[in-house]
Image (tube, rainbow, N blue to C red; front, side, top):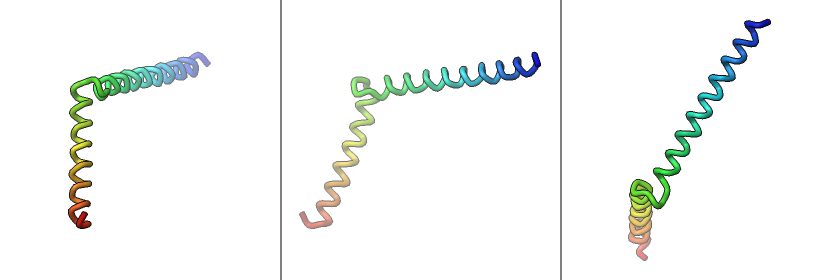
Length: 64
């Protein structure tokens, strides 16, 4: 009986540790990719430029 409780406790501890690591990674990513950070601004610029190029090419192909 005591061995079952220990196994369950260890599994629960592992799950909590993984959840905390995941929460930490998500928080770091959110800060790094926010618009106020340099990295977030660069990523936003890449997507904006790509979208503009696609739109420009589409307009050229349609004759507009």
